[in-house]
Every structure is written in structure tokens, then in C-alpha cells.
Length: 225
Image (cartoon, rainbow, N blue to C red; front, side):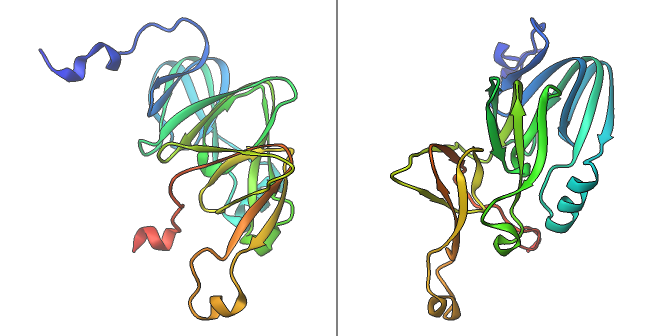
């Protein structure tokens, strides 16, 4: 049988080490020897002796997620074997955390991560419910985090002399040490007349970086319509 689909770059090779690695730009391969975590429904294939179980958020995180619709529905993957994760053919990236690193990530952009990483849903300071309920996922510790992005991400440096303003529907994540607040970029009168569609942004101050995707998230109503 002959076809380009059987090209060597599409064929899985034997694993050389445990943990996650890019299978291709659209998927992550995780060699599990113990436990890892992934977004619910992200597994596209597996082999070996693996079990997939829903992971609880904890009482505080569950309440935040229920109120805001943010956060991340997780599953624990346990055992020995290999699993492949992907989500709607989005681009996949692996972020390697060193001790002391911390990153704020939008829950919709998390694909999978090592059990050694700490994870908590936190309110975005300076935004709160005024910003529509901005609760993002904060990762700390040492290990690897797999993230997804619709299109190619844009990484913008942030320095103390020049804050960066980002659309809350396009932001993927940012350095956790940055200070956040809401910024209104149009007048009340303009909003009454229909607005520009760019009424409020997230302002980031300090030293670090912010990651945005080249498209805005759509609400459930927009997606259905």
C-alpha cells in the first residue's frame, strides 16, 4: 500500500524518554509513567495500560469556574503507556518551567501538563467581575506544560516604560509577575452609538511578556449563530 499519508514524518517512532514531546505541530505525545493531567476530551489516541479519570477542581476553584465559565476541566491520566493529545487542530507548544517560574494561562489554551506543576485558578487582579469574570490558570513549579493556540502566537515583551494592552478574548497567557488592570479605550458616548468593538482591554505593567493569538475567542452564542 502506497500513499503520502505513510510518510516518515507521520509515523510514530519508539519513545526514547518519558514525558511530553511534540508529535507534530498539531498534537502532543505523552509517554506516561505514573500520572499527568490533560484537558477533558483532548485524548485522540493511546496505547498501553492507562486510565483516564475526571479530576476535581477543589471547592474554591469549582465555584470560580461555575460562576465565570473560566478555568479548566481536567482529567488525570494514570498508568504506563503513551497518549496523544490535541484540540481542534490548534497549534501545540511545550513550555518548560524551571524552579521559580510562573505563568498565567487562559484555561482554554491548556492542553496537558506534568503532575509536578502546581495549578490554581485565580482572579485576574484589577479586573474581577467588572471584566466579565477574568479568572485564569496560574502554573508554578518545575515541569512541562502543553498549550494550544489558534494560529501562530504573538509574544510581546512588556517593560516598565511601556505597558501593553491586549484584547481579553485574544490573550493566551502572560508572565505571572506582571501587574494587571482594565483599560477603557473608547468613550461612553462612543459606546452608546454602537462602539468600535474594542471597548475594554487588559493592561499589563512590569517586566515580562504576554502571549496573544491572532484571533478573538467567540462566545457560545456566536459559535452557534
